[in-house]
Length: 395
Image (tube, rainbow, N blue to C red):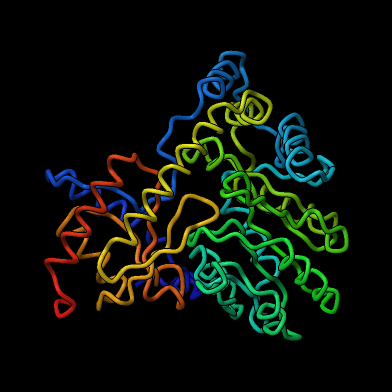
C-alpha cells in the first residue's frame, strides 16, 4: 500500500459538489430534480465579458502572464475597490488567482501549523475548517447565531482569541446563512483587535455586492489600523456569474504579498490570460446585467422566505445578503442531513444539510435561490408535501 502524508487524510470536502453529483446522477436516470444546493448564479456571463475573452484569444493572448496577474487586471481591481469601498489600494498589493479558494488556501497555510489556532465562522464555508485541519492547526469555531441575524458577535470573537491564535477568518455577506454583519459590530471587533496585534485577518468579501433591504457591505479595508495584517478575498464568480471562469482576486499587506506570489509560482503559475481580459471587461463594462441579477435574487428571496415559513416545522429569517436562505428545521423532527437526503431521493429537491457547514449547522438546511422563481415554487410545494406526508417518526 502506498504511504501518503497524513495531512491529506485531514482534508475535508465541500458537500455542495457531492450533492450536485448525486442530483446530476438522479437526473440522468430520468428523475425531475430541482437543484437548490449549488451556490452559483443561474445566469449567463454577460455577453460583453465573453466577447472580451474571445477577442483576447483572437488577438493572440495565449501565453503566460505574471504570477500576480496582468497589471491591467490588477488596476481594474484597484478601480473597483475604490468605487465599492472608497479605499485606494496599490496594484502591487492585488493578486489575481484562479478562484476564491486559492486565497483561503494561501492565507491558511501561511498561518496554520501544529500548535496554532485559527478562528473561523461556524456555520461557514466548509473549506475554511478543511484547510485549517490540513495544516495541523486547531480550528476554533466562531458561533454564527440565528438570534443575531446570522451576524458574528464581536464580543464572542474577541473572547475566543488566545496567545496561540494566528488567523481570524470573517465572512460577510455570509455563506451559508445570508447573514450580514452590521458596521457597528465590525467597528467593535476592530477596536478590540488592537489588543491582539499579532492576529492576522482574512476577510472573505466575495458576496460584497449582494445585499438587500438597504443593507450595505462594510469592507474591512475601511479600517487603516488593521491594513498591515488584513487579507481581503474577492472575485468575479458570484457578481458577474463567472463561477466556471475560475477568477478571483485578493488584496494583501506588503509583508505577505511576496509570499503569496511565490506560492502562485509553485502551484498554479498564473491565471489564464483570456479570462483576465474578460475580468477587466466585467469590472469596467456596463453593470446592467449585475443589477438585473440582483433584482431577480431579491424577488426570489421574498418567495423563498414566504414559502419556507409556510412549511410545517420550518422557520426562516429573512437573509440580508448573498443568495442563500438558512431555514431552521429543528421542529420537523428530522436531523438536517437526513432530511436533505430524503428530500433529494423522494422529491427531487437538492438542498445542503446545515452540518456540512459546521457543528452549529445542525437543525438547518441551506437553500440557494440561484434558480428560477418557477423552480423555487415547485421545490417548496414538494417540500410541503414531503413534510405533511412523512411524519417525524420517519426520521
